[in-house]
Structures are given as C-alpha cells and as structure tokens.
Length: 248
Image (cartoon, rainbow, N blue to C red; front, side, top):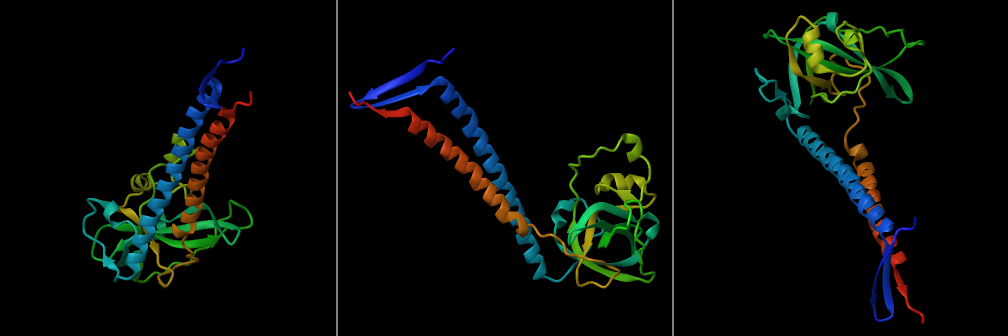
C-alpha cells in the first residue's frame, strides 16, 4: 500500500513529500546527530586527558598521598614512590600488542616504603611465548626502587566472558585490569590506582610505548564530522527530492 503524500504549492514550485520519507528522516537525523555528539565528546574527553598529561610533564613528580578519598583527582598525574616489588601477586594483562606482536603488560605490586600499603605498577610490555600458555620469564629488582610514572585508574566498565567461578579463582593471566577484583583477590592492602612506569625510569621496566589519547583524537573528530555530514546529507536529499518545479 502506497503511503499518501503531503503537498504544498507556492507560485510555480511545489513541495511534495511522502510520510514514509519524512518518517525515515525523523528517525535517521537524530541518530546521526547522537552518534556524532558521542564521537565529539570522546574526542573532547581525550583532549582533556592529553592536556592533563602535557601539564604533568612540566611539573616535578608528586608524592603519593596517605589517603585516596578521591582517586579520580590523581588521574594522569606524574607521581613518584619508593618501595620493593612483591612478585607473589604479579599478574600479566593479556592481549597487548606492540609492533604487531602479541604479548602482555606486567603488573607488579610495590610495597611502599614506610607504609603498609601496596600499589600496582604497570612495568610495561613483554612478548608472549611460542604458545599462548607459555608465560615470559620476568626479571625483577630485589632492592628498593624509586618508581616514577603516571597514575592510571582502570575503567570499571568491563565486558568479559568469564564466569563468576572463573572470576573467583586466582589466575596469573588477566583479560582485563579489574582493580576492585584484584583488591579482594590478594591478601594485601592495594591502593585504588595503577602507576604506569615512566619510559625513562630504570625501576625494572620493559617496553613502555604508552598510547596517548592524542593519537586518536583526530580519528574521533573525523567520525564525528562524518556522522554530522550524514545528518546534513539526509536533510538535503529529502529537500531535493521534495521540491519540484511545475512545468504546466
């Protein structure tokens, strides 16, 4: 059944559109705009992170506070801390790629000097073995080290196919950095942050080509312009196909 058309006439120009076309326009344009705003907001958030990171490079590393009432305040700040690595609760973060090669991030808890707490240190990337089940051998300093790095707070929005039983079992290899899960899985007091070891630090680090937000800001902005372009194009196509010149 053909949908009726709505028609308006002015001088020798007629504006005639179908309800189907209007309905499609009313559905598509808001979706395109929403997707564009989503990508734009992602780009803005990454720009804020990049600005915070750039600002941290111009300042001396800060000492970690005694209490973390609001960990988010410390996001992307450069900090320093002294302590001893404890490899008993070291984990490998799986599915990390460097130079097209699969491997792991090595996260080792550091016993903070003069304090009872520990803090997780992301020491960087190491290559995986010939088989996925083969874990790399890790050398770890046994003496006190001074760690300098950026504060990272892992996202709590985690999608995983692991069952609850698997989550409750201790595993050296983790698919995601679930910090609350880690805190309840180990018998030590771990701060609610992770420190990404600075690339210039010699505190037992590995490959540390940390991906900065700026690398993908342009990509997100490109997607945003693309979705906004689709919204504009949809409106223009609707108008172009609706206006007709009367020839009689």
